[in-house]
Amino acid sequence: MSTAPRALRYGLLTSVLVLLVCAVLALVAGTAFASASAVLASATQRTFGVVTAVDGDSVTLRWTPSGGTERSDPVELAGPPPPVGTRTEVAHSPAGPPLIPGAAVLADADRALGTLVLAAVAAALVPLVGAWQVLSRRRAAAQPPRTLDAGRVRIQAGLSSRSWLETATVPPRWIPLHFDPALPALPSPAAVRLRGDPLTHRYVAAEIDGRTVPPSGPVRSTEPRGRRTDNPARPDASAASRAAAAAPLRRQLLADLPLTAPAPLVAALWALVDGGGLGTWLAGTALLAALALFVAAVRGTDPT
Image (cartoon, one colour):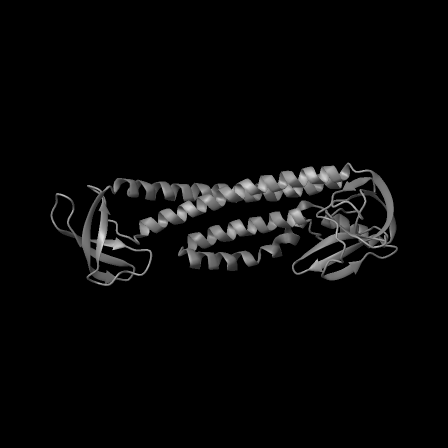
């Protein structure tokens, strides 16, 4: 099994996950927006009313419909209620409830529309990024081959780690690679067949054990930051077994799950700023977690 299909399959897996989350969010938000829009579209008549009482997040509004008699109705608000005695504009339909500035239905429509736009942007960006990844890596694999001495290093930075090839050139270069089971068992240093010149090309692929290992990012001229682990000059048999155990995509997915840890906290901040409740938090958590896994696939995390 070649490494390029493995990297591609994992990228497709995380892309589909993001698109599924976006589809669910679009369905829920679209339904909420359609419902709120129907209420707003029917409220074509205008008049004025007075706030006569405040009860938590709702007020009691005294108003007179066009051509009707005076009445009092409760109106749920999305923000702080105005003080008693406030005169406010009222929008209403012949049979629907009255609406005033700050009404909850207005906030629900804005929130649903924002979720729809966010889901659409994420759903559009993911295929574009994926297509660019595939095309740029194919161009890298098509470059003229050359053989250079290089060693594989694994660098842990925060919650993620990546595999790199450190060349013996002067000056040295660091080539990030998508994970391949052959990498942990690669003697370091070793003569590695590269596709491209790390001193001049931005993306360089490698051929290891007859497989083309695509780059997971541009070549670096400075050593990546993080905790470094070098491959031994003669890896033992356990290195190959550990690499084989990490090869399945489910193992990669489990290894990348810690990267989703910030999602609930960021979603909570989003819900606080947006004024949403549990639904907003759940939507934000799901979307941010799926995007975190997609970014990990793009960056080529190492599950060992």
